[in-house]
Amino acid sequence: MKSEVVITEHELPGDVIAAIEGGHKIEAIKLLREATGLGLANAKVLVDRASRTHGPKKPIPSFADQPSSLGSLVKSLALVLLGAAAWYFYQG
Image (cartoon, rainbow, N blue to C red):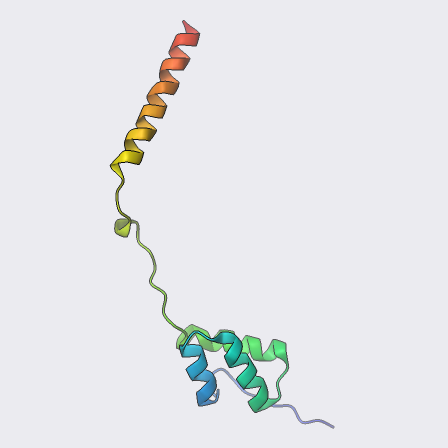
């Protein structure tokens, strides 16, 4: 009978955590499988869970960070006015 390895995302080897912190999930999965003998699916689940706390942080884009484009606003306004003028012309 084969004994099963029980490991949580808090008990991962240091090299696996280093790979996760570097953003290398596939490498982390390979290292974890070699160290523990886990299957692909179980290793992926553990690495995904661990990447929530150890993974690289991605900045959340903000609407305020987007550059304003006056040109696109003018183009949109011109398109609306053109549409209103066409509607008025064909109605009357």
